[in-house]
Image 1: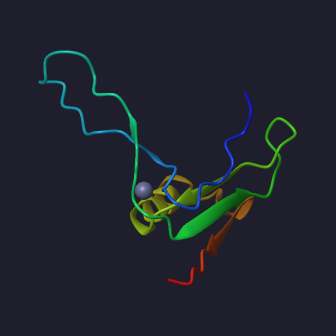
Image 2: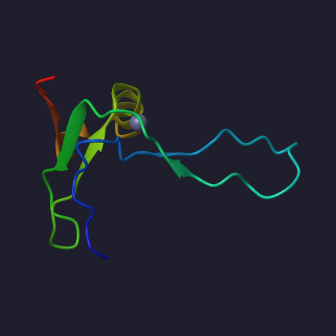
Length: 84
Ligand SMILES: [Zn+2]
C-alpha cells in the first residue's frame, strides 16, 4: 500500500464516531477529520521500509499523544508554521 503524503490542507486523522452497543444498525464508519492541521507527525522507525508522516489538527494531535503514550519516542511531532 503506498503511503499517503502529508496533506497540508486537512488533518489526516480518521475519526471514529462514538458507538454505543445499544445502537442498532451497522457501526458508523470512520471518516477523515477535515480540520486544518497544525502539526505534522513523522515516524522515527520505518514501517515496511518507509517512514510514515501525517498531518494532524491540535485535537487529533492530543488524541494521538494519548494513544501512543509510552511509544511517543517513535515519533517526531513538529508544529506547522504557515504564513496567512
Ligand atoms: Zn483532526
